[in-house]
Length: 248
Picture 1 (tube, rainbow, N blue to C red):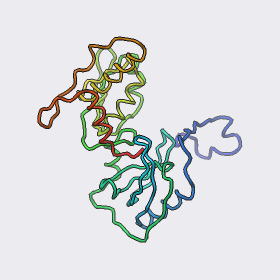
Picture 2: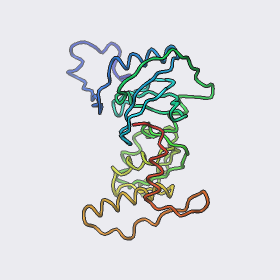
Picture 3: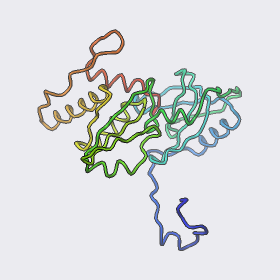
Picture 4: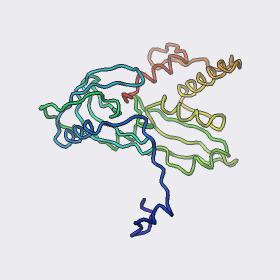
């Protein structure tokens, strides 16, 4: 919007400009939103009943609401705060809150918490317990669009002579990166970490099986950094999902 000329308003505005409004996946209850806003302002804990889409589990939570956050890409409002049930900072889709009330118990936001730092560790608002160095190489064709966007605050792009590029970033949500990179198909290749490469390979193998294509060369698994135990690709994917700190 800051590109619009000063004083650009009135009935003729939409004869010149059009705007895309992201369609939210679910409706936000205005009363719930107002209560959260009030709780954030007054530093009051909230009690809520929440349904996560990933686990389809309905749980009761006591949450210290730190901040309301709007995701422009998905057109969705989120509540970021400390969850006593998980004993960790979590991200909640407000439209998945089934019931909410404000308690009379106050809380304090830790001085060590930074909303900017928290969001920098996420990818598409999903975060995990460990930070990974991610490297994805894009073909010359796809690189034209990749270099036009800012995908993550930590990103760095290595340009190659053939017109391809390698996108590097530090994120803590491999499962979210897997979903994102899969949309580019053969135009993208995960270089690291090995866990993410195996997760994508597993997805490709399962797609191949669904379409009757043999994928016997795909996936050998990885070695766990704890104890040197061999982990199957399926376990890698399940472990990554379990570590996500967003309660979609």
